[in-house]
Length: 122
Image (cartoon, rainbow, N blue to C red; front, top):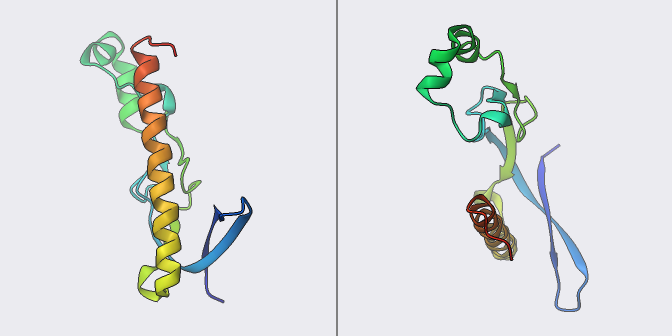
């Protein structure tokens, strides 16, 4: 049985159309194949003073005590990704459309996070 990558697009009439294309497994980019990563509470980073104030915290942090299962691969260390080499030209066209839409959404979310972090309301 071959694994497939699924995604959906909205057609010209407003209907959601699901696509299945060939897929393969790759090492997860989020955790670099570790299956875990830093707790989201540390996403803004830590400073040297955070470690200086509590040497035990530094040691536990460095040992991975606060790591959580990867939010992308859920601890599996690999993720299913499109296998472009096995796709037809039509499948690649649809995948490109989907990936462009996803990139646009990610860009908008990043912009909104930056605006919120600067205290901007809209």
